[in-house]
Image 1 (cartoon, rainbow, N blue to C red):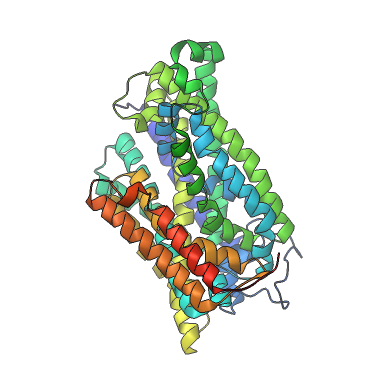
Image 2 (cartoon, rainbow, N blue to C red; image 1 turned 60 degrees about the horizontal axis):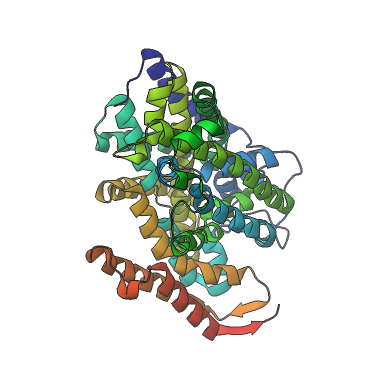
Length: 485
């Protein structure tokens, strides 16, 4: 359904080459560093939880991210599901901003004001580090499992695979393998520095791609008057025809923000607490701008292409209808950059979870830690995270279903114990914290698996996340020793 001129293919191949060049080149450079910019962790140590400064350098770029690098990396990492955004904005119109935008702005604000500074000041590396510090090593290991499941790169590999099929005509398994390799090889060399440097380039490209298509649509078709005349009236309402209960579900899904390892990693890597806090606030402004661009593109797609069998292809098909050669290639580069920025970040977090939070933690518990172990095991973890993502993408070839499954199962196990660990007035007994993590996760996962086995019909009509959150809350309340507000 999509045709590409030779110039489009050349531009897209050039994009992949530049991304690889940036990723390899940045391994010997500093990702936004400035001398003297680090904030000492409690006790005056800048070392990672493994006690290795080289590990902190590989995993967190030496905790030196300045505001521009922090913002570019966080903004680009948070937008991997661009084809899903296209499907949602095509189907529900303006309501996609209410459901896909507003919940995340809200929880990002809460993160900025209540968590960002505390995450940076802790001097730790990962979410499991924090859980282990407060509740013991078993909680840290269980947290590592939940984080690894939560940050699966499967949905982003699947989207890149679909785009590679559209552009190059590759079979899906080969497309998944090749797109995974692009990120894997430069991350294994340069670690988080390479991740951030590539994110900066992708940040600029994703905005450029959508500014380009919105500009073409505006000058070709007109503005608001064209949309009003050619859209179903419900697409311009705040609810998009959805019930309040359905809209509310997306605000619960927005809780993902509070336990998202990408947020925690970038705050831990910021040069100081103020940079982490300001970085999230500035990022919200860029997210609002990008949501305006993507929602507007979806509205134009619905107006220009009113009947699509697969709305998930609304952005590519609008580009096919609207953009000339070269411009089409640049827009597809914007789509690729949007997905790849999240893919590389999540693959790296998955690898870091294996290296720092599983292998590294076991070695520390046995007293057998050695210099360079975290980096070595992280590189092995990158491969394992990529394989896990490819297998899951082939097994469950639906982006929305993957998001729904991992979020519903993992968030109930992480949310309450993690939030309590950052609130000094709450003292949660370690065994109750571990029970809350395990109970919330297992109940939601069991609920989910029952529903999947019965055609999406859940016990008592409850979504899987709710019973897990409730059980985790009840166990946590029973285990709270002291609360001081």
